[in-house]
Length: 312
Image 1 (cartoon, one colour):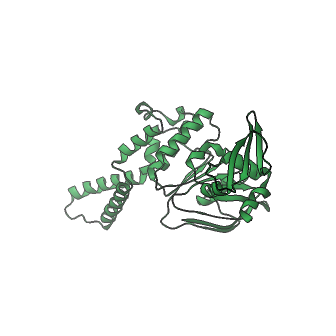
Image 2 (tube, rainbow, N blue to C red):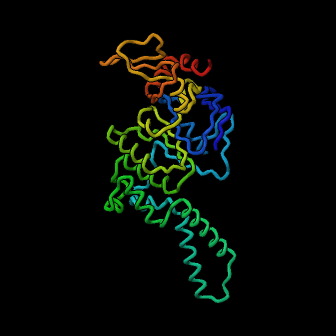
């Protein structure tokens, strides 16, 4: 769906990252993981078309729609929650108002025949058909359903957005994105600044509200926040991609195991009260579930060992 080739970004002649290449396929659920300052936000801005790279190519199909959730929310404090969410369909509501105005002109004049009117009707019909094909039924009902799915009560609909905390303001912006039903959803550090309870709630919300046809690309330095939601991992560090593999590929090549003693063939281990949690070569092809957080730490601390697994 989206191809990134040889991407390079420089600030004041200092490379942030260079020669970065990867592909985002339809229905992928990808985590872009890296430390703060690794370039994750810049990467998402480039994918969203908000920033140009120094060099390299990002190929996005013309029909592909992208929704982008930035770290910093830009909401008007003069609107209610409902009014802000309605901006998702602002262009449709404006067309509807124009059609009503022109219908009034038609009622007043028998000689009125406008090419603009017919084009407007065609565009409005197309948008409605697209909405219905994506499972929608009624625009305003869909707004209410989505807001309630994100935890808002009906009493919240008429409250000003200024009354809500950063986490709730993020949910309003997320509602707008979900209502637009983009093909690709880019989320930039969506759990940043949230407490543990709020992070867990947001994870459940995203899991519940993103449909099976959507493609998800999440940047985060808290890899464990979205473990059960992902199927692919990209680790960005020191200006390069250290790992770019599906979780199925990772589980085939690596074994994540808890042992009482430090394994001799450990690629990376952490000790706790119960012994060792280790990453081992999966020589017997055992079924197991990758621990993204442990793998992220390993890729940062022993990158050559992790790279070696796929270079053998």
